[in-house]
Length: 246
Image (tube, rainbow, N blue to C red; front, top):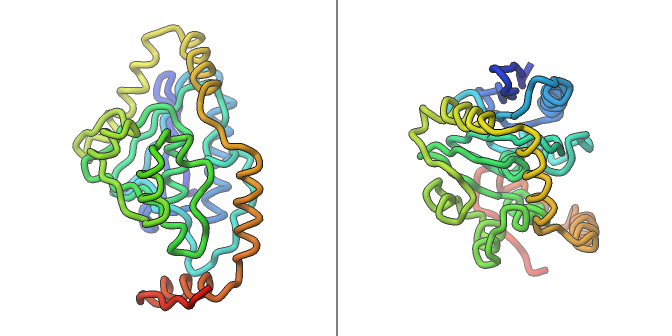
């Protein structure tokens, strides 16, 4: 089992537990993730959720292993965490890449280790930048372009300055501080916490459905084109890509 669930008081804790693969997520691990969150959702005594990773890396994204076959559609939705009015606190450290960052975007409070490096590397593996990530994280357009188009990593301190991280703590303290933040949410009436989350989510910036269609249509149109094939080959062969004029 690559993902575990247990309850600590009234905090339901989901742990990514595949440290030998940097908690990168393939189809088997996605199914474990779905089961763990289903247990959380079925647990009436879990008033707050906590998402953490075992090992020095929270999640290195998709476990592609040279295979870019899309993951099967998840019951968890686009951000791979449940759509719920219960608050979810996430604790990250090390690499937080691609799908791992999606999960952070789906949570409500983020504790980051001082060694955390966020990154979106879709373009380097022949995929367009994610359409829903930037608005969900309330990123300025210039920063969004830098992170998505250039794939530059973002350290914990800058992420906090941009409002994407609540706390930066020593890396070894991340899981402990995550549970502590979750317990802080238990000091106020849970019904009010849930209503507050609903109200905040109701005023989040959303993605126009037309943009979603543009993403999927554009991705399908580019699949198999020479530069997409070259990007993936260069990644597998650990060499600089050699692109041609489009």
